[in-house]
Amino acid sequence: MYRLASLVTFLAGVSLPSISHAETLNVCYDQWPPMTIFPSEGAPARGVIIDMLDEIYASKGYELKYFEVPLARGLDMVANGLCDMLPEIPASEISGKGFVYANQETFAYTTAFVVRRGDPWRYNGIQSMKGKRVATGPGWDYSSVSIDYQNYLDDPKNSDFVEVVAGYDDVVDRVFNMIKENRVDLYADNDLVLQFVIKRLALNDSLQIVRPGLEKKMIEKPIFSTKIPPAKRQVLIKIWDEGRVSMKGEKEQVLLKKYGITFNK
Image (cartoon, rainbow, N blue to C red):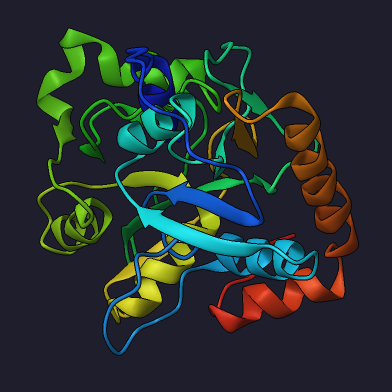
């Protein structure tokens, strides 16, 4: 959900040379494991959404070239034609200069909270936040899933209870350890992200995921550069839309299980 903030701020509009749009699909993406992951030596996995892109576009003869960048940079690169697409950002009413949304969402994510194991706290509206120390990241925006929650984080009267955790690609890891160390009490994010991180950090004995989360689902969709010729862009969007529909159900579950996560009913 924090990703929406970068969507609001990226529109600098610097004119840069456009890339060629042949059978290579240039994809910018940010680190949001397990949905999108920066690979490393010995850990080549790129995440659920990137696996989807590989299957959908490779089957149509495209070669995918990836650029692992912070979200704000990725949005700039799409707007300026240096990347053809970015695989998921919050679908909002904010009009994007330099990109258009696909029709089919990647996922509609539910949110959840992570707290210390044994903590009886559960989210029951913004009044349940009273006295709780909550972690977030710099500029992260939850307003697409709960305006009340975002207003709580932004309210100067709550500053003693809101910890803004800085970092590059390890903010969520740091937040989990801060909860374990009793430096903050809770953190909200995509349920799938919480499942993945708590397992990867082996913190199941210390932390737990609790539900319900925030009020609305987080709808995310791919975006495509307006620097792509319109006919070509429509082909790319059509390939995504049809491919994503074809992957619903069993194929989708196989991908989720690969990363040890599942949607909670």
